Image (cartoon, rainbow, N blue to C red; front, side, top):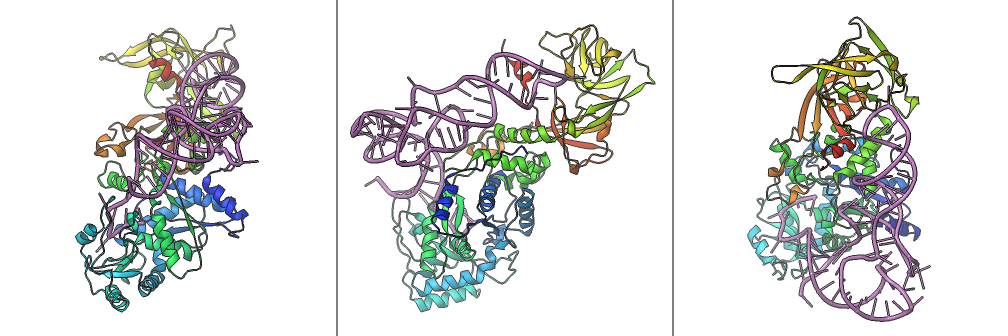
Length: 558
RNA sequence: UGGGGUAUAGCCAAGUUGGUAAGGCAGCGGGUUUUGAUCCCGUUAUUCGUUGGUUCGAGUCCAGCUACCCCAGCCA
């Protein structure tokens, strides 16, 4: 609903439309290929929306493929969370999820094909020797002493490697390409290494694992991927991608296209840094509401639709970018503004006693669930002699710009009556304990009969039926726009990224759960119930605040 | 002269047979409003990294320059 309807256009979709028009493919096929070594984040959402979105819009298909060639870093828990998050985002992959590890047998056979063609060799050089011979960005590399080993020997040595006869690091299988290539990845890249590691999918079957560059292109070809979309840092790797496909016997020629990865201000989007935040417990976990992970955003209250809309708005190009948080916030506000029912909550309560109302009296008021959408219906709220209002909504004195409750002045209680502040009670420290007011009985649902204007409206909760609740307010996780550029990004963590408040919500929210959806707490922001919430102690996360023009006015110079 | 990429408003981004700068976010001004919200209206690049060239005409074509990003894991 809040999602814009027009289909996105970008250079990749243009290539696809051209290919389709030229009859190059009868059906477009893409894939989303995460390594299961962490949780998905908003940057992955960009890739997911691109790949699955293309499949949807061009009647094609998109595979979910776990690129699991490095068992040491991977875990089955990540394949589960990734599958869950992709579905939650609203996408469905073609058939069963795929795994690069499904192709280990075929990959191994292709490695042997390369050996047979004299295009791969087993190298017994040490890590240090390999590095030293690789050369530098400006100097060519030099050939390894093992580069000209004969085919039969290479066959035999690779078999021994595969059989576990060599230790990790003792040898590797390398493609024989060009040690003088200006593309570093073409200087006889290692395509298989020895790793005595248990694999979450293949168990202990293998002690050699193929490298990314060798695996990815072949996996794409085996799955019939037509357009293999990845991020910019793989542009050089495309030469190797094509080299492998060109030098093995395979009847599919997928094409790789690169787009720029997403950068979001005031957060980090690299797997390495997110893992560090979790491991060092700077956050409560992968789903901490301050995290840019899908799980974190979900717990924070972001909807799948708002994330899809965000991906649509940021577009897909090859330009390096740094997207403002405001862009993301605008997407969730647009969604929740139309979809979230309204309610009232007081986050920092101060008691108001309405002196001209009987203590025994309690009224029930029907309040709209949405001011601009009456089809959403109404809710019942109660009003009685004692109510809570927001501490910041009262001042003993204030100028005309302060459209709230001021001593001796009137204000409208949202959905209820006009009240007037008569006097206050303070504690020994001078803090306001209670505000004594009177109310105008003839102002429910109408303006004062004598025509006087009351411009301020504040929210409130009936003390008699209020439900206590904890509110968690979040701020940006980092204090600088680009924490990844810091020497140590951990030092840029915002110590005030979480603020906890204790107040009240209206009675109707008793029993709220994380499945209840979102509310707009009027004049405050959008909230959802956190999984930590319990019947005796409701916990609400602020997804995002309302646009706050008052803050600008109040803090404006002069 | 290692190579690969990218340069359009504060941010994101259209612009693709060269014809006289879309849209979104943010901002600003105004209107409606029992949310300082929403909504509505208006406004925001004489200019497309820069310097030259071709052309009646260039963001789009050509040449030079500059800036930024990526590549020297047996990571992906």
